[in-house]
Length: 265
Image 1 (cartoon, rainbow, N blue to C red):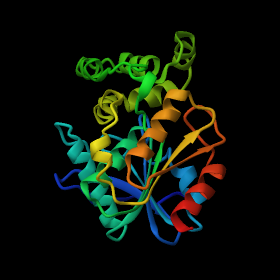
Image 2: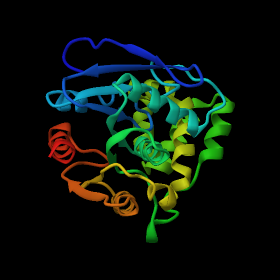
Image 3: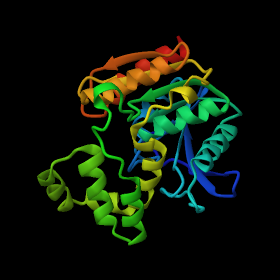
């Protein structure tokens, strides 16, 4: 996660799926869990910012990068993947998750994984007046991927779940980034399944015992910010903060100090 080429390591999940990860830094273990369209490359900049104080583990969620993808997909298998990375990290770790990765991290902590501290960045829950602001497209994504329509899956996710206008998506299609998005498109149904249509699983979040912080960006839409705060409220003793940032992102230089303060004091 530094300027040098990272060393890729591998661990086997409970179902035998190989999960690729890289580590950087020194200090207590911290695992980074990416969201839709993310792999370990996406979290590397944050990992580098945290490396002076943590041993940071960034991994490819199943189906991404150099990890395997044993089917059928189940949330429980993804939780097992995270458990395997935590085991490789020494048996316990702080966990940071972004977007659908934040939901996955929260469900894992609620299930009792050895999470020493939990940070959730804008889990896409829809609460209050925002319920229904984003349509549940799980079934549609599954059908598109089954038909090998990767372009359609990416376009559907970006337009419905992210809310990008048609002209923005058309512009993206002409850019090299489109190829990277379609290459990972088969994992979009996984993110949709984890996100469960944006429903807040308050009863499951109430089972989390790890110190928990929810983070939202000042540049994000209100529904994401409210959903993040609702997640914190559902966790016993949960806290929430807002940081200066853009749409569904906060720069590592701003985010890392906040994570460091919460997890290390």
